[in-house]
Amino acid sequence: MTSPAVTSWLPVPEDSDFPLANLPYGRFVAAGGPALGVAVGEHVLDVTALAAGHLLHGVPTAAVGSLDSLLAAGPAVWSALRARLVALLSDPAARERVQPHLSPAESLTMLLPFAVADFVDFYSSLEHATNLGRLFRPNAEALLPNWRHLPVGYHGRAGTVVVSGTPIRRPSGQSLAAGTTAPTFGPSRRLDVEAEVGFVIGAPSRLGAPVPAAEAAEHVFGLVLVNDWSARDLQAWEYQPLGPFLGKSFATTISPWVLPLAALDGARVAAPPQQPEPLPYLRAPGDWGFDLTISLEVNGTVVSKPPFAGMYWTIPQQLAHATANGASLRRGDLFASGTVSGPRSDQRGSLIELTWNGTQPLTLADGSTRSFLQDGDVVTLRGRTARGPELGFGDCTGVITPARPQLPDVSADA
Image (cartoon, rainbow, N blue to C red; front, side, top):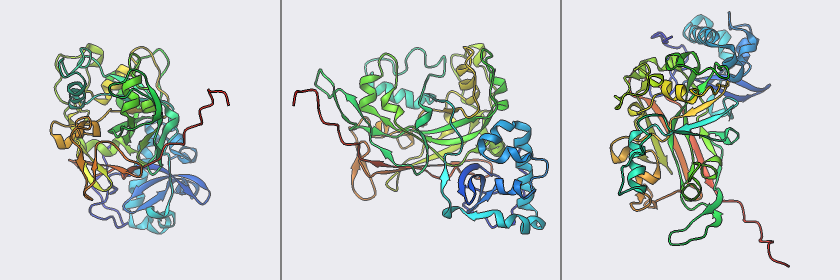
C-alpha cells in the first residue's frame, strides 16, 4: 500500500530522510533490551513499547518484538502495522499516548536490523560489468557471454554482515604482486568499496519450489543500502575458477534502516530494456526499477552519485534466478544488487572504476589522493529517492582500521 499524503504532528525537518511516508524499520538498544523501532524525522518510535502499551490495535504483540518476528508475521501484518503507525503519528489525539515512546535518534545505539539468514550478491549493473571488463579484458569483449542472459551472482557470508558504524578491519590474505610468480600473505593494499542496494526476504519459500518473477512482491519485505567491501588484490588472485572468497567475505555493511516496499511505490520506474529477451522464467513485471540515487563519500568528500534506476537485472529476476534450481528462500535472506554504476564517470560505484584500477587517483577535499582506501578512511553511503516522496535510508558508514598484526613465522626451527 502507498502511504496516504498526510502529515505528522511530530515535527519533521524538510530535508529529512524519514518523513511520515517512509517509516523504515530498525532495531535499537532500549531500556529493556533490543527493540523494534521506526524512524520519523529526528526521532525513533519504539514499536515494541507501543505494543506493550496496547496501542497497536489489530497487530499481534508477538509480531513486533523484533524485525525478525515482524518478517515472520507476513504481508497482512506488515500492512496492518504500517497503517496503524501512520494513524498514530498523524492523529493529534494520539500524541499524548505516543510521545513517551519517542526518543531522539542521536541518543540511540542502532543494531543489525535483522538476523541475516543467507547473503547473495549479484552483478547487475551493465555499466559496472562493462567497466570491469574493459579494465581486465581490454582486448576482448567487455561482457562475458553469459552476462546478458542471467543475473550473475555469488553466495557471500551472512555472518560478516554488519550494521552501519561498525569498524572495518583491513583484511589479510594471499595476493600476487605484479611481475611475480609466487603469492605472498599480508594485508590488502587495494581495499575498495561497492555502493549497492539490497533487498530483504520476509516470506520464505519451499525447497524445490522456484519463485516465479511475478510473485516477488509476496516475498520481498524492503530495501537497504549495502557496502560490499572488497579487497581487490586478494580477489584477483583467488577468484578463478570459483569466484570471490576472502576478498569479499570479511565484511559487508548495511544501513540500520529497512525501507518497506510500501514506502517505495512512488519511486518505481520502468526497468531498462533487455536484449536479447531473457528466457521465459526471467521475464518479469517491468515496473521493478527504483529511481534512487546513492551518494558515495570518502572522508566527507562526495566522489560519486550512482543511479539505481538503470540497473539491468531487476529484483524479481534476481529472485527468480536464485530459486530457479529449487533453492529455497529463508526469512532474513539478504540479496544485494552488486555495484551500482551509471554511464558517467562521476556515477561509478567503486574505487576500482573511479580511479580506473588505480591509474587515475581521486583528489579529496583535503588535498589528499586515493586510489584505494587507507587506514582511518571513513566511507559513507547515503541513498535518496529521486521521484515520489523524498525518502532516504540514513547513513551506511564504516571506518577502516589497521589489519591485525601478523603471526610470527614458526615454520623454521628455533
